Image (cartoon, rainbow, N blue to C red; front, side, top):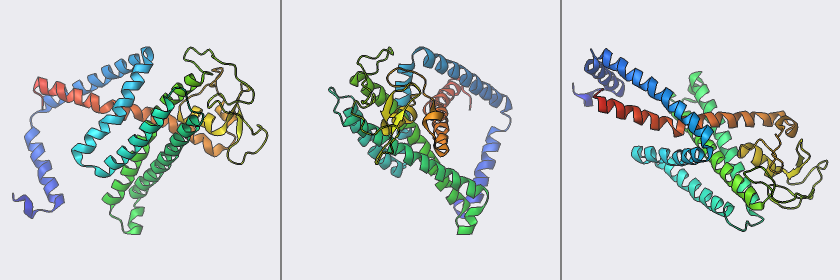
Length: 306
């Protein structure tokens, strides 16, 4: 068959028929490959859970590195230059912010710089993911035809935005947590053991170490002041970044559990916490799923399965 004379749909049908003809009679081999896939997924999941429980620091660092590098490999391989440009810009700015967060002594303006940057990325990724999801749903319901947009183009647009939002949403949360831990330990109010290393004044924010000028009962021009259930007070940007962006559900000073429902009186902000939980689940899918699939393919290659 001369493939050049066929339409793209006809070429796909021919390739599909060839694939079925090639694998006809290999049902036993295919069943063995499925069993290998299931067994590898179960064993890998058990190993990852145990690793995360016993050595969370090393697990988080390796996961963060894979989240950062694995998509870069597919980007270069598949020539996704738009994603590569955005990835380089994000990596450059995040590297600068992380460098500032790990300096000693810590500059007083660094904590606010760090939290504002990661809050900005969080909001952009959240909005991008929502727009991508809406584009996918509109395409499934056929609303793209109202704008004379091809279904494949609309679906590609929606999936691309959804991927951008979810990927950078996961990545910025991990970097934010690392910076939050390091800065809080550097300031001295928070330590890994849970014991404060400095006394916290009532008019000082435990996250950034700067003075609090707006009372809890007052409405701030730029930002408000929040009081947690443990009665410690913080700048709005600092505690929002600590609790939501950095995945910290405890007070930075006394380690008491933070009551997010009391802290956020606006009900429209509560889905952000649910969105953060979704990103935690997707971290496994993006960081470890390609590794597991690659391991399965290696086992199939060693056993001669195709």
